[in-house]
Amino acid sequence: MSATECGPDVLDSFDPIDTIRVLTLHEVRFVLIGGLAAAVAGAPVPTAEIEVCYDRSPSNLVALSQALSTLRAEPNPDSKVLVGGGRVWCGTRNGELQLVGIPDGTTGFDDIHRGSVQLDLGDGLRVNVAGLADQIRIAASSARVVDRARVDILRAVAAVVDPA
Image (tube, rainbow, N blue to C red):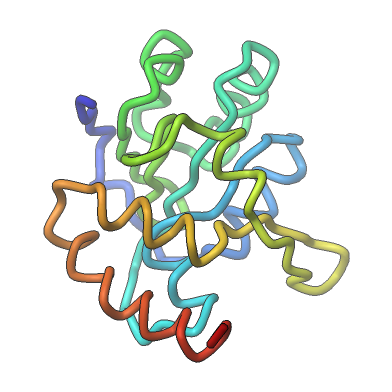
């Protein structure tokens, strides 16, 4: 997969809750993946970005584009870029946002969504977070050093959470 960068200089502050709120208000179908998903699962990993796997259906790409406008993504990638499924980095009003249509080792959103866990963040805000097995699969399949370094940590968390 190719990577496309979208102006990471637009960083004001890291606010993943607001990013999730904006995506949810625009009815974007997505699953939280990456470092923040690992941290939510209990992995002791630092992160200063939010990474999501998004549904590449035409209606969801419209909703995602609208949400990216609200988040002041710089620049706002068009649907031609997003439908490709590659990794897109965007600077937003809430910090860095990585959009991944087809995470490594998966077939995309439906594949990840099946094993996701829905978490209540309060005030009626819910987010789907990739399950540990999928997080491990993505990290183990990735060529990115930051992802590969997370594999053993995620396996250790999985052994504690689900020792069976």
